[in-house]
Structures are given as structure tokens and as C-alpha cells.
Image 1: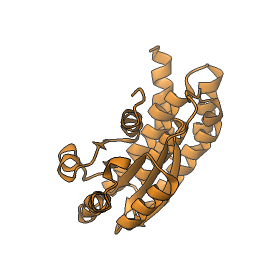
Image 2: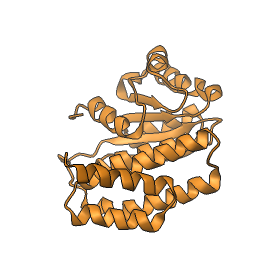
Image 3: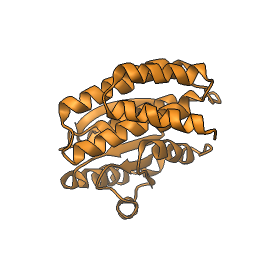
Image 4: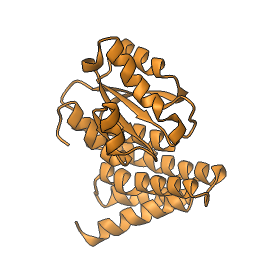
Amino acid sequence: MPEGKDELFKKLSDSVVYMDESLTVQLSNEVIDKGYDAYEAIEKGLSDGMERAGKLFEEEEYFIPELLMCSDAMYAGLDILKPHIKTKESGEKHRVVIGVVEGDTHDIGKNLVKIMLETSGFDVIDLGRDIPPQKFVETAKEVEAKIIALSTLMTTTMEGMSEVIRILNTLGIRESFKVMVGGGPISQSFADKIGADGYSINAAEAVRLARRLVGGAA
């Protein structure tokens, strides 16, 4: 990859972290002007910056006002880049039900995954945060989703993820859905323990995982 491209994506990431909306807009327009890949700019620029901001929030260096300003910058960049994404759809859009499990209201990571999935051609039904396990199952059945994506940032609410899988097993419909999990305290070993189909460490990896789970190219 040419050095200029790397540098531009890094600046785009920094502009989100530093809450500089006007610079994010300027850099996003530069991505388009130079003919760089819009999806790559979202993944390595905007999404990366928001993930970094999320880590600063977890470390209590950033608080809600800073996060909101980072989000504003990210969305301003998305407005410019999204129309230029090269779609790789082959007809059917795979449906994903996503949400933060009951007891947790931290949704930065979930929102990032939602954005990345949408820009990758998935049809995403976002339930929001603090969602009871039964609601995930009911919605997935109702909309005939292929994937249930569960997020949490708290160790105290991780059990809600295993409860979703338990309900699916009890109803005899576990094989109808792929379940993917993610969030700060989640690990591959935890995903294996509860019987999830996959775990992703960040939003970009979540897209690759979702593609694998529905049989597409990662």
C-alpha cells in the first residue's frame, strides 16, 4: 500500500480521536479525491479512531461529552464515504440482529459493529442496549435473521449471552442461527465455553467473522 494512503487513514483516525469534525470531513473528501477505497477508509480510519476513543473511555481518560464529539466526527466522515463504497452484494442481504445484553448500556462497540456490517452489505436490526435474552431470540425468529450478534462491556452481564444460546437450544432452533459475541471482557475461550459460533475482537474482525458465518468470503 502506498505510504500516502496509510498516512491519510492514520490522520483520519486521529481526527476522530481528537474530536475534529471539520478535519474529518476534509480528510474524508481527500480519500474520495485521491480515489482510495471508501470502505478501507472507514475501517482503518473512522472505525479505528472510534475504537481508540472507546478505549480512552474505558480508561476514564475520555467521558461521555468527548465520546459524543468523537461520534459526531465519525458520522460526518461516514456521510461522505458511505455513498462511495463499492458494493459486493450478490443478491440476498443477510440479516443480523444485534444488541447489548441486558444490564449493560455501553453501546459504542455495538454501534461500530453495526456501522461496519451495514457498510459491508448486511441488513442489520439494531435492538439497542440493555436487551433481555428472550428479545434477541424473538426478534431473530420474527425477521428470519442469519446471525445474532451479542455485545457487552461488563463481566456481570456476560451470562446474558449464554442465556440466549440456552433459549435457542431449549426451543430446538439453535441450528437456525449463528451467534457471535464481542466486547471488552469477552474472549475466544468464553465464546467456546458458551457454545457461540464466533468471537471478534473489533468491528472490522466482526465483519470478517459474519461473512464466514454466512458462507461468504472473509
